[in-house]
Length: 203
Image (cartoon, rainbow, N blue to C red; front, side, top):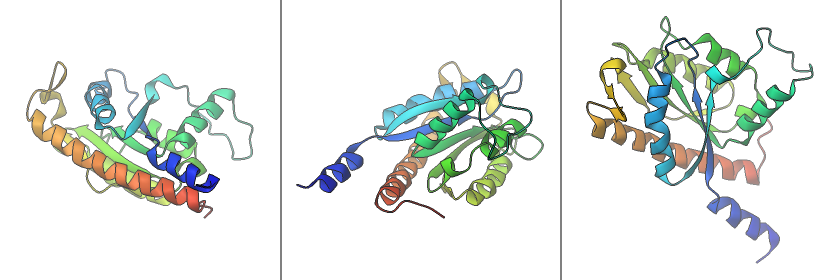
């Protein structure tokens, strides 16, 4: 077995690194309730190593630095976490028929780190369940050369669905939707990682 075969085998068996991005930073936000339910499901799935990036814990710049501007150590560390991920799950509410501005700032701070990777969505809100924010995010991530996963998870009237430890209503259905999404995310993330390994994405 030559060195290339060894490397390919190691890559195929290595767990996929997934960054779970908690997109809300509003006071009294509901996002941690949803992420506390979702993250254990992702960890138990078996294919993933999970890195939680909670935007409320980040000090993002009010003025976005230019691409040639030297970044702070904190921003360089954040970019390294995004770049190390094989795929992403964005947990987002819906603000005024779209996703939070703080999430857009976080997305726009990075560019090459997103390319040729898969992204899935967990949304929550009122009657719409956050789905309008997801539709806008699909357009943004498509522009960044990401591959949005078809199936997602949405909680309509989210505040009525959660009790202690997870969804209080239709827990089996919510977990089933999450598994379907994570199965698709695993396939796409693995396929795209294999592709980036054999032929670096330079578009």
